[in-house]
Amino acid sequence: MSTLGIQATTNLYHFYEASDDDLSEFYENYLKNTDYKAWKMSDIVRTLLTRFTVDAYDVKIVERITQSFSCFCDTYQSNVPHLEVAVKDLREKCRVVMGTIFVRSVIEERANKNKENAYKKKLRGATYEELLEENEPNTRKRKNTENDNETQPKKSERLSVKILKPLPWHEKVRMLCKSFNKGKKPDNRLDITSKGVFPARLAKIHRSIKSNYFVPVQLAIKWEERQVLLRLAKSTSLQDVEDLIKSIPLVSGTEMEKFMFLALTKLVVMWQSGRLQEPSNNEGWFQTHVYGDVLDSAFLLDQGYRTKRTECHAAAIKFLKKAKKLPSETRDVKVDMLVYSREYGDVFVCEDKPEHAPDSEVKADTTKNQQLAENRLAHIQLILPYPRMIKYVEVISAQFHGLILSIYGTKMTEAGDFVHYQKCQVTLPHSPHGHYSQVALFLATVISLQRNLILNLTKLQVLCEVERLDALQYLEPAAQNTKSQSFFREDTAESQSEPEEQVESSDDESDDASEQVREARIMDAAEEKMKNMTYEKDLLTFDNWEDILLMDNRQKAE
Image (cartoon, rainbow, N blue to C red; front, side, top):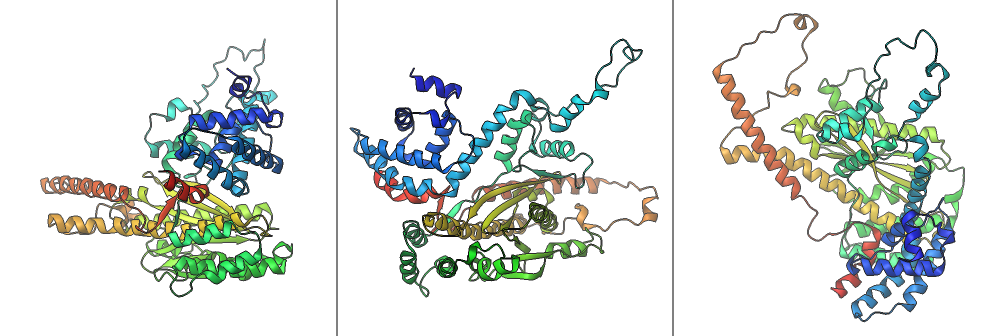
């Protein structure tokens, strides 16, 4: 085994200590051990940083990887022609990919992981509160005192992988909520993407919870839109962007081509003005001059939506008060941007904050978004044929902080707990020079966000329709589900004190058995339909920006 292999395995090498030969050897091993169809610069960076440690993001890391990989590709030789073609393609896309915020997030994530590993032995999986408790002098055992022989109360067993692993998903989440939110309200909220929520000892549980509930933003674009995005990513000046804008068809083009026309036109004007960088820009300024064109206009041409700005209130609160699920005195919640469907209420909510806003205000908006998402799911659960169907539903929200757009998702478990997560984060640059690929990724994400919302709305329509289709197929009436608690009003205080009469008959038992069979049949049908839900046939789907860049050459290689 080479020195590189030994050092890499034990993570003794810091990235800055690696020689050019070490990096070249790594690139060669990566290409040998990875199928050429799966070659990606983002994957190379991620794998590289598991071999070499980094302390923090530094532009010098990006520059060195770009330079060393380009030099490696220039000297690469293979007896297999399609491998040389694939390497050449990686070489051409290297600088574009390395300049994206995605690569920066990969480096930052790995640097944070290295810091966590450095403290792992010291922490030994304990939470911060437990460490404080261990260091309290009053809790230490005292020797040679009369209390030594007293029986101490048994300490409650803390959560562990062994306890949580065999449980169903919704019970895992319930126990985590109970543990993490002890003494807090609400106690049914679990955030799986914020740092510091999960202790190190539950890292495996965190990964499993995330794999089951987390839904990333899948990039979904049409062929014509991809061509516009690729041309934008390859631009080197504002003149190139102006020529691109002029080439976008406003009459015959797709809805999202028209969105890109509006967004790019406004961005060119704002970049020329130089006012994106002014610290005095407040929330209203961003809403008027930026957000309306780079986000709101993506929903402009879809007739199924209504977009509202500033003077709007979340409809979910009104629905829940009307259904007696919230107290009538609950205040309506005002939101910065709302996408609304007449049939299903709130579809999407976005909160805004300027760049100079303090962290406390940004955090308050995040919490507000989480509460609205929870109310939205509670409203959706009321209109579904069966409450258990809520596990198929995801509510999406977003938050602007200056030019950074964070997109969040929320799901509800069968036990009534809420799982929150960040789906992705993209940024618009203050100045476009050298960042056109970043702008293209931002636009692709907003386009895909709009289509993700359409897909989620379609799923909701299918879930609400599945009971009616079952009734037609089996000639059974799709009556109201009187077994659901949402069907009945709450008892009065007087009636609650009276003993409840239990009257059962063979007819009731027969009805219950028939309803259970019907519910199981409908749930199976819903599960099958959810598995087969996908985007429209003319949409291309990608997991990340690099897949968009490399699609053409991979098709040629195949």
